[in-house]
Structures are given as structure tokens and as C-alpha cells.
Image (spheres, helix red, strand yellow):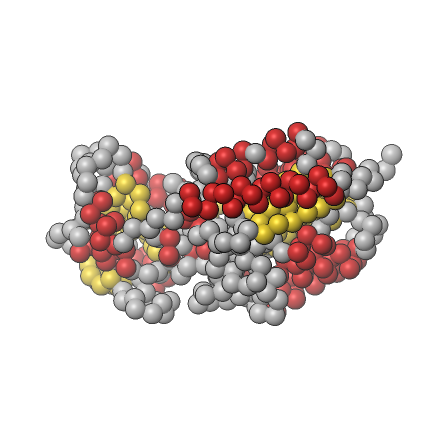
Length: 455
């Protein structure tokens, strides 16, 4: 029996339409939080064992005995719009490779679901449309999406199946890619899956989307029950900064009958409508955050600067929280990661243990921000190749560029910061331990004044 020939490719970008910098081709080619652009067999060999959707699908497909035709995989750090040049170049490479691949039995795509380009508000919908036009209506096309996808009717129309992450933080990325394989197998056998989509009539900010506790743990916990009833269903919580008409939460379902699929999404939508008032959207003011940091506690306090999250398109160099911590005379603070290539370069020029005057942050042009100026002590230096150790990105390497751990030398505050040359989201303890800084050490003797700040 001939093995199914399955082409795989990935193009990932989460677009913050309010960001300051765009994602050009160079941003997709470079390594940052994830590997740089991969072609051919490197798509498999250089993602193997990583918590990436394409790695999970490739592994499941190999076990199933498929012949995999790897095309390319790339991602760029979240930012403002993807340039037309980048989108047209990368989508063109995918389409050219599909044409050159010979007869195919199926296609899998590793996508995000919140990509906005200069010309297309629904970047994934447009890419799926082009791939569908290339392969025809009879070849199964499946794709995986991020939990923060803004799922559009066009995405659903062109893909035979969409699988979506079910955890935030995203611990199930590879698992989600792997979930595409058994559904693809059903489609290859000729099964017809009816699809349904519902959108939720309200938005949910990122900091309110944690899936480890109610109400979202309960909502996502209902999906295995639907699967036992023969329905493959998934939920996206949306990415509000990708500002276009389809922005927001949604749910999809696939079943043997249209009635089953429609009933499933109607049930999920009813749960969304019932729980709107139970979603915790609380944010602390800077003053409240500083006051909280002075309260006694047994473990370090973690403050997340959600407005400057590079994983959502932030510049990672605003200084509002840092300045508040300094003014609040906070001690035993570990803060990171700041994107400041200029300061990182000065630290490397000064050398380990040296002290030098410099300016930290606020170089990207965010209105109302000014650098933190003063004396800095170099605690450690790195070339920026930082192996992940945590569950979310374990198996990969963060590429930070020239980077440094610095201490802000101030008589009243004691604050250590990690500064990088390449913008990365602070989502792994390795981003601190790589520099010899253990977050657990920021609380042993001063439980009332320990703090970890994530920028």
C-alpha cells in the first residue's frame, strides 16, 4: 500500500496592530524565541523534540507511516503588521514547493491565527485560500492554531479541520499539532466532517485568559466529553490587539453530521455567554503593585507587565514599572527582559564586574517613556544562546544576542535586570538562570521585599 504523501509548512505571526515595528522578511529569517527560517528536512530535524505544533504533527505522521514532504517553517516575534513583501515571499515559497512536490494526499499547516498583513486583515484566511486554490478541493487541508487565534469564516471555509491550543500558558503546542494527524487520517479514508463556527460577542484581554482555573479550566474541560460524543471541538480566546472585524473568541466543531457540529458550537457559545461576568480582568496600578511588593510573603512575588509583553507585540523596553519599583525603594528585585541592544553593547565593552553609566530602556519611541539613567554594575555577560529548560519551550534555544545581567546601583533600591539585544518574551526560568540569577534567591532573607518583574 502506498504511503500517504503529506506536505507540511508553517508561518507564524501574532500581529499587534498598535505596535511600532513591522515584521519584514528578515524578522522571519532570524532566530529569536524560536528558530530562524527552516527549509526542507531541517523543518523536521531542527524542531524535533520541541514543543512546537509542526514537531508534534511530524512525529505523529512518522509514527503513522506517512511520507512527509517538509517545505518550510518560520515565525517572527509579535509586532505590528507583516509586510506585504514578507507575506508574498513566504507564501510564494510555500505555493511553489507545493507545485513542485508532485502528487500529494494531504497538507498540514502550522499557523497562528492572528496574523494581519499590510494588505490582508485576515492573513491566515488569505494563506489558506491560496493553498486551497493550489491543491484543489479534494486534498485534505488541516491546520493548527494558537489559543489566541481570531478564527474567521474564511479560515474555516478553506481548511477541512482546525485544531487549537487548549492551554495558556501554551504547554500543549506539540500536542495540538499531533491532534491533527488522526483527523487527517479520517479525511484520507474518505470521511466527511461537517464543520461549524461560532464567534463570541465580547473580547477577553490576554491577562484574563489563564486556562488553569475556572472559568476557562471548566470550559476547556468540556472538550474531551464532546470528543467522546464524536465531535472534534476547539476554542480560541482571541487576540485583541490584532484589530480587525473577526477579532475575538470563537469555537469550532467537526462532526459526522451538520446537526452535531452546530449543536456543539451552540453549547460552547452558551457557556461563554453565561460566564462573561465571571472573568477576572483585574489589573494593578503601579502604586498598588509597589505596595503589594512590600507585604510579607513566603514566596517571591511576580509582577507581569502585561502592557509591555513582547509576546504580544510590545517593545519590551518601557520603563514605567521599573521606575515605580525604584521610586518605591524596592529591594531584592529581579527584572527582565529588557530589549536594549545599546546598553547590552556597553556592558560587554565594560566587562564583567565593571561599573559604567548608561541609559536603560525607552529607545523604541513609545510615547511618554524616558530611559532609566544611572550607574550599572555588570553581573554577567552572555552571547545570548540560552537553552530553554521549562515545559513550554523546553528543547529549544532562545536567541537573545549580546546580553547582560546588570545591577542598578542605587542607594535606596536593589534591582537586577536582564538586558538583551534581540527582543524575546520572558517565559522561561532559563532567561534568568542562564545569567547565574536564580529567582528563588530573591526571597530567602527578605520575604517582605522580594520581587520578580517580568517585562
